[in-house]
Image (cartoon, rainbow, N blue to C red; front, side, top):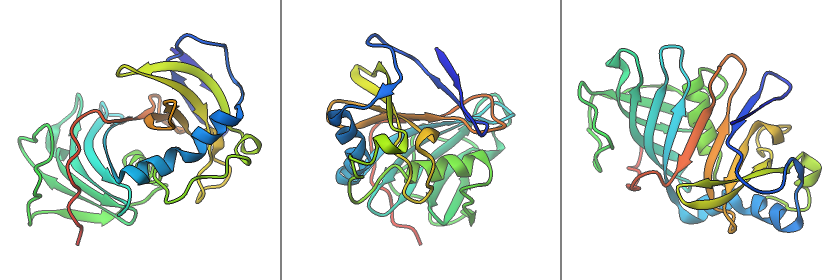
Amino acid sequence: MVVVALGAGFVWWFTAGSGDAGPRAVTADEASRLAITRFRNYEARGRAVTISVPDPAGGLVVTASVDYRTKAGYGVVKGKARNDSGDGLIRWTAARVALHPMPATPGQAPARPPADDWFGRPLNPTGGVLDRALAIVLGLGGDRPDNAQLLPQNGAAWVGSDLINGHPVDVFTGPESRDRPGTAESVRYWLDANGVMYRVQATVAGETDPVVIDFDSHEFIAVPPTG
């Protein structure tokens, strides 16, 4: 495990595999992979995700499916080492998040969500760590590739190699979010040779453990329409 302290309160954790020591500037091929990775999620339309969210009471795990065309997610949220009163089904968009409490939360959400007993509120992408994590997940899809030629100028770098669920991957910083300039070092991507995303990991100030987003960790189910 490697721990790298960055400015503005960010700390990065990653497991380094074999290969050349990083960080170093990305090659043209690596920049192309970074440029296309969010478009790969949009192209796939939906991805199954497991989101590990740090929490003072022990942490949360969201097991969900995300539709990158409609920018919506649906799944289950469970607490670790804490009271399970907040466990249940969860739905979210860029604007709202809603929870359906369940005393016995299943491992995965049912294909058809309950019609009633949802408690919703606005999603605040700069608020609590759960909201921030949900917003980050939705931001990992884009309807067009980034500009590969600009990525090295925006701080993109190769930092190591790894193996995620049997998939050989490279670990990169960047690209920055279009709607949040200056965030090239706020995200690390685990990408395969085709630019497919298998993990994203980051922590923010005030949290000891990182937010970890793993892809294809379970079966994808269609995300029901909201509203």
